[in-house]
Length: 202
Image 1 (cartoon, rainbow, N blue to C red):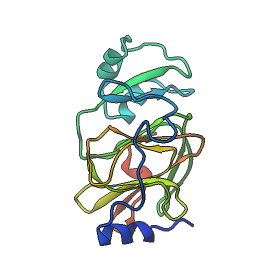
Image 2: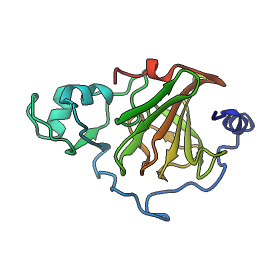
Image 3: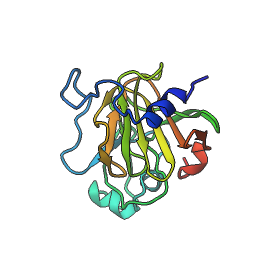
């Protein structure tokens, strides 16, 4: 079972920098570049629709279609890359990445398997409390402090794009994935929340 105790200790002691963070261009380059426009990208999975993708990222169908020059009922091909513009900010949590839900637990968060190179976004606005290459067996991990007693955890990253103490807008990329699923949790202090219940329908 994964433990949150190391993260809690880091947050309580105020040590956000638990190891060197990785910026794009440092070490191994990202598998896919971050788009030059404000936003990120999404690879269409089997069964996905424009409406479902837009809902996951806090966008209207019109906004997503316009950003990609598609009709509102435009056909999507599996593997097609869509540009995801930044959504209007909201206090609710959004999916950090879309993919196959491998597991879900009220006490241990969720595991999301996505295509290598997929960008992991800030589920909600927050401040980077932790950005480290190795956190107690979690691997490359980012923790956002949402400054209201809640935290979101993004573990199993391939690369990290943010630095400790940075203020991050909802929807901005925090890092990228390789073949390892993203481990994602939402916590109220040390108390785990039912992460899946706090996200839009998958």
